[in-house]
Length: 97
Image 1: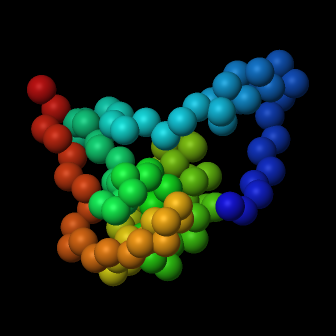
Image 2 (image 1 turned 120 degrees about the vertical axis):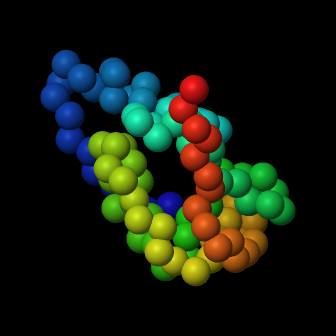
């Protein structure tokens, strides 16, 4: 995995470390869209997946600041087991109740 430098104010160091040490959530709420389910590798069930050709460090940085990510690549790749697969659409958003 690539290294990313994150600069935070001294008073925010503990909270930033707590956020960075959290695992990847299986699902989370997206304002006005509903529940988003994280994609998993169909072979090993890891969350360490990305779209082929997607530059992971900027993608993770964008997710950290809640920016939308366009899903434009042709397939997925697991960074845990190396499995690759094609999927026509991004994981669906469940309707907001």
